[in-house]
Length: 264
Ligand SMILES: Cc1cc2nc3c(=O)[nH]c(=O)nc-3n(C[C@H](O)[C@H](O)[C@H](O)COP(=O)(O)O)c2cc1C
Ligand code: SF4
Ligand code: SF4
Image (cartoon, rainbow, N blue to C red; front, top):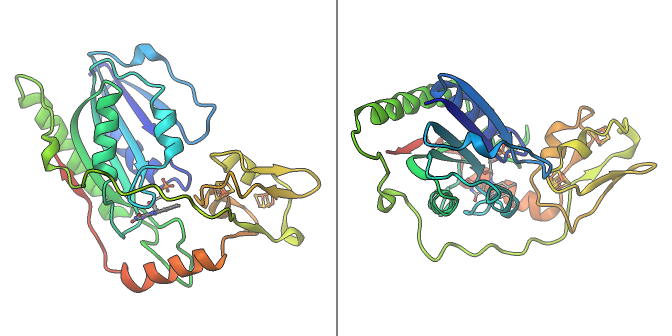
């Protein structure tokens, strides 16, 4: 393969960690990083060709893919090139998201040769109520190596195409509904805010502004927690009662470790 494209939407960087490692393992030549977490991403359309392989990663949001990630990804035309699709979820379930990503990649003219679901620290995980804390961990990253080896073997040993059988990917059609989220957002403890702008940069939907203080538009917030996890002063928190309730439910019901799954 002449070039490898690594495409991802990853507000809290767990998806980024998984797909970057996978793309590095698969890459023998040029590696293109296409981070679609912010809307101003750029890519070279000529990097998608018969000689390229791509890795696409997105997190699972309420059993589906984040809508902003879907819309941004559809700017890319795979032109019949090979792709590996990866979803990363917070140790609850990935529901219909991997099937959705497989179909989305096909719609964007990619040929899907492998699919995988990995586990990442839950966006709502806190020290007091952890959810898949510190994942992907060393064991997960070892599984990324195993997946890369399996993909390489598949490509080298297949005389024709090496498409996956979509029937093997879990998920149910029609996909679970994307529910409208209430207009809530993380809060800032202004007394400890350094006005550094890291939260503004981290936000995938441009929901945060700094005037004389940090202002957040809850209508634009997708609840991703990038601003919470990246604030260097730990002054952003998301403790609305709705989030506390989700956090509590995850802690009580989803603490048993799940393992990555591959479909080749
Ligand atoms: C709005 C929202 C919904 C989520 N829904 C799910 C879910 O349905 N199942 C699950 O296991 N994790 C869910 N998560 C957790 C994320 O999938 C998980 O933390 C993932 O690692 C985040 O990826 P990122 O670090 O690339 O942003 C959700 C997170 C958010 C922000
Ligand atoms: S990242 Fe934190 S400290 Fe920096 S401006 Fe945002 S809230 Fe303030
Ligand atoms: S304001 Fe909302 S959308 Fe923006 S980074 Fe924070 S949680 Fe994510």
